[in-house]
Length: 148
Length: 412
Image (cartoon, rainbow over all chains, first blue to last red; front, top):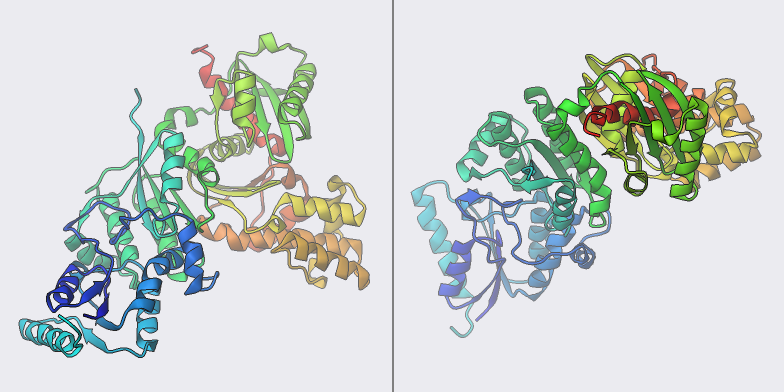
């Protein structure tokens, strides 16, 4: 069993796929609902306080916006702990979405810097691409090995 | 019970900055209620494309879609609060464009703010109060004539001012530096009453504004306790006799600055704040002290100098003072240094705040700093317009309070 960081971290589909193939998804398990009634697309269920942006200083300097640092206080430890990563670029909002582009850039960069198995894919735009997309994820997760 | 003012929040980052609670508390304290316009994912995709601002952050796309839902009447609100992370360039562009878009296409009052994790409800309170007042008390703000005998008191961070008005005329004034809030208030009230030749019993209604408005308002049983953004706007257009049509009000205060875009005496958009005390009246006070002149002499001194001869960076009051000391040590004249200090403050207000409101003439400068003619001149040069400084401009908050308080005479 391998700890797999998923990007977008809010994607329930990805999280589910990782779990189905016997690994541990590292993600923020927040559903993206069809109706959006919260402040942001992936509003945190957690009680984020002004202390979190300070904890985020470990991954982003003080001149980086507070919202980025607050997010990094959640994702930073997961990125450090992960043993593999799946990155889906340009995903549809409904697939899973993280609200801040700057955080997204930083998260993807930090993952790409890590010497771990990575799958870097674009979100499918057709049914055919969709089948290949799921197959690629399946092959990647199978190839990670570990006890299932 | 009066229903709360529904304030639509368009934002990116407040929850992850840990300050959403502060926004909610500030709104609640002034009878407001924050809500997030309810839209569907398909609206985000469609409206973001229609708006045409190609940003990357999904939460900013959401803010754009929500703004369009408000403007097009698909979601109802009384006011709009736009908040994004400080230091995010992408968010700053969206914040400004949404503010402009909503102001141009709807009658919704808007306030925008860039926050850090250190933003507190106290910081947001005056802005929220102005927002709810504009939304709820348009009838009060429509008053153009002062009636009866009223008292207005402005308990500011640097000075306390009082005005007594009778039948649309100022008949008494009082002014002194703020020390003990209540004592300063009582002293200026006594002075204004003495000048007017009346007693407290003759006063028919009282209004308070400024930082000490709640404390003083409670003490003197004010009929109206109101933040300074709406009161100063009202006072400015009243004194400048520009009650109808557009105007821009600039108030460089002792502790913060206000830039307000006004239509028919009612604020539309406004900014409040300043990066540092270097952009406030406090810096000019320090400059006057270092130059060995009274603050009242700084303006005339600056008018004799050439600010361009002295490099001055007052983004921070400490570094600004350092520039000032260095310039004097290098042989610059006091006149040039005074002019440079005025230009530096005006430039900061121009760069930091006036970019966030739409400047419409006439531009009216008010508050104690409007009496520093070097500062008014510098601001006029930057804006390429002739600035209007109305009579009694230093009493602006007190006049606005006295004017608006007359709406309460019958209630009393």
